[in-house]
Image (tube, protein in one colour):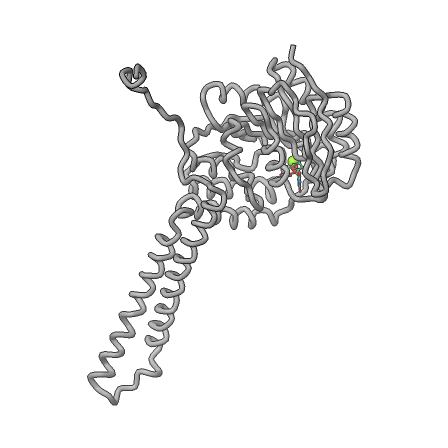
Length: 348
Ligand code: UDP
Ligand code: MG
């Protein structure tokens, strides 16, 4: 029997939960649920999650993150948490967004495996078992794929399909459904990632930098029963912009000079050619008027752009060093280390 100590989390002045009683037993699974105004869904979410998780027969904790809900979500969660020590509630001071909610959950996760799931019951808690099977099979990241997605075609499914293609192509991690919240990760994968903006959907791609194995499996998807979606069509554009960030960080995050420097050099040389040509013309015949040649403008423009890009590369190098060194963030991830001491050495 696992010892269960009631968690009484209190909140300090900056809204970060301080855990007064550390629980002794570490669960196998940590389920992270972001919640923003989902009062109608919470009772059946809790019931269905508990049923599915109990059926799995592994120890678990549910970390709900109330992302500044203005309805009764928090009150409902508190009631549930008082009765169930496996349920933890983190309450944000205001709405910080789904990515922040995930990050708070990941920070607090104690299990060996983290599963994320939406609170609106569009994901099916029954599918968690299927995700875990893939983790057991050795995968580090298992992504849900909403094969029969119950959302509107024009403003949700279509943009999402294009976005998935684009993300897959740009990051080299081919998934059909980046947007599906139902995913499972080995905990060390998410603990090693700092999330900003709305980057949560890119976790499998960002994690690919660590050299993880990623797979996807079809999961159920239901139409939203209660409330409304917290997002609109505007998300697609933001996703594309975020993709630029992710792509850059993945390929050039540790060597900005190599991309900006290259662009700069190309532009600089391309600008040098016409300006040199015009200079030669002028030197050959002092009477030639080169001041009104469009070529001059182009050459000067390319040179200036070139200098700017190279400077940007240098600044990027400085910023990158600050970024890694201030956090003492390694530029590599070790899988394991072996060292077998010499038997003679041991004897000494
Ligand atoms: N959510 C959140 N903070 C936000 C927006 C959404 O915690 O600022 C939660 C929301 O309560 C839900 C999940 O994130 O559990 C997904 O949101 P939603 O269902 O609105 O997105 P959709 O399924 O329409 O993509
Ligand atoms: Mg939803």
